[in-house]
Length: 139
Image (cartoon, rainbow, N blue to C red):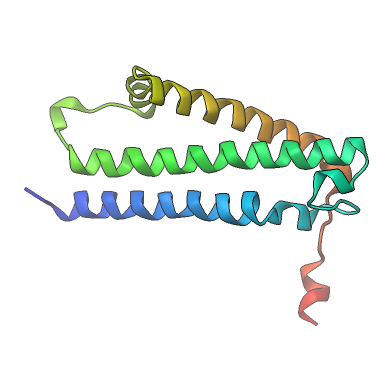
């Protein structure tokens, strides 16, 4: 039957999918990640070559990060829906299972490439990052 635990796991999955959707909207569609970068425009063509490359790298990285977060939410919802204690599996096994279909393989590959690009973006963008002093903002 349906237990409180299963409902909570499903709810956590739905919220996690929502966070993935928010990341996609805020950082990919609205390009919100550029707000924390100094001297860069969210339109890659309005920057110099390295700035434009950095914005494209950020977009691709945030796409990957959004997909990974949404996939985690999907696996939580699926775990709640198809709960079978005799068939417990970890995230790695769920990813392997998802990659047995063409669409699943494409999603897993896209997510992996996106996370890799997100990491490269984080390293490459360090010179453009702004750090706000919280104390000065509240006074």
